[in-house]
Image (cartoon, rainbow, N blue to C red; front, top):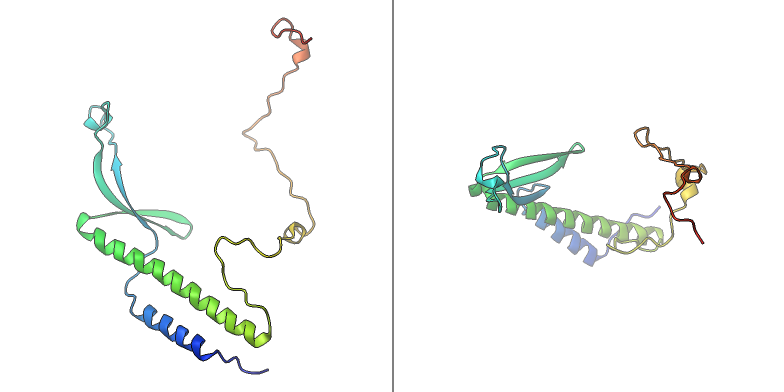
Length: 164
């Protein structure tokens, strides 16, 4: 099989992506939000009408091992966190672009049609449900906490007007 050789333009773009990645700096996933909260003291001003909530407090939230982790961020570190979060967003964009570029090069080498990402565009062909379920039908089971309420309305007389 022949070696895969990207075009000069593709090599230049890959080098530019690598250079930008190298200069990116620290990066954090997640989001930064500002919160105002109610405390537990019933006589506090935050329980008045209208409430005067405590805060604002800054929180950094992210997912770690499938769990949501939240950390309070001191006011003097908010700008640092914003910069790190922006860096993470850019990191993800650059990695996605590099993956698309690599896929394009691989597709050119094998003769396949390019399949670059296109956000918001539906897939070209629908997913075959039988392939996902191996031909078995999905069976929904009622939760044991939920019980259907059935009434025999034919036994109830006088509560509803007779239909004409």
